[in-house]
Image 1 (tube, rainbow, N blue to C red):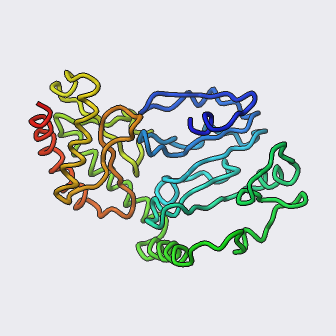
Image 2: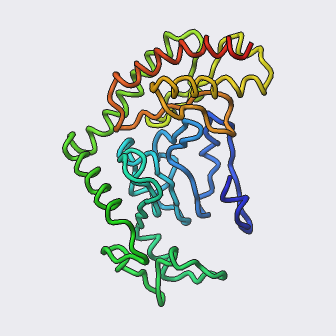
Image 3: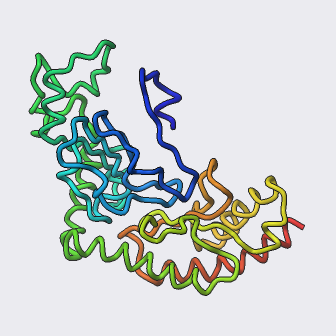
Length: 283
C-alpha cells in the first residue's frame, strides 16, 4: 500500500486481503496493468502459481519478485516487468536490485511518454527507444564494484550448490523442517493457513496459546518483541519479530542461505523456551 500512499494514480483499482491471505485473484482485470508481489515477505504469503494470469492479456504484469527469485518457480512468460534484489535468496548486498523487461514492457516504454518528470535513475528509454546500454553494463552512476563482485560471487555459489533447482530445494526443505515443528507445537501456527500460498522464504508464525490470546493488543505486541530480543541476546536468532503492521508474531527467513535443519531447529528450540520467559516478563 506504500505505492498508493506515496503517489496519486487516476482510476486505480485495489484488491486487498488480510495478512496471511491472498486477494481474489479471479477478480483481477488484465485489461489494466497489474502490479503485484509474487512473495510477500511481511505476510508470509505467496501466489501459488501464475495460472490466474492469461497469456492474451492486454495490460502489463509488473511483479515484485524480490524474495521469490532463486527460491520459487517463476512463470517468466506470464510476467512483463520483474524486479528482484541481490539481498534476499542470493544473500548479497542490500539496496541493489535487478529489472527484467519482457517484450511487452519494452514496447510500452518505446511508445509511452510520461506526463510528469522521471528521475534520471528511472529513465529506461531515450528518444522513443529503450536504452539498451543500461542492459549491457553501462550504469547511470557508478555502483560499488565490491557489491557487484559480491553479487557475482553469490550467483557462483548458487551454481556450486547445484543451480536453481538446488536453491529451490533448500528453501522447500527449510519450510518442511519448520512445518514439522509447527505441527508438533502447542503454541505456534502459520499465519498463512493455506499451505499452497505459504512462502518458503519468509515464514510468518502466529502465537495461538490461550494465555497469549487472553492478553490485550498492546501486551500481545510486546511478546514477539521480547522473544526476538531474548534470542538475539543469546546469539540464536536475529530480527525475527514480525512486521510492525502485521498481527503480532514471528517472522523467520528460510531462504537458501540458511543451513538446512541445523539453524532452524536450534532457533525453534530456543523459541519455545523464550515464549515461557516472555510470559514471565510480561507478568
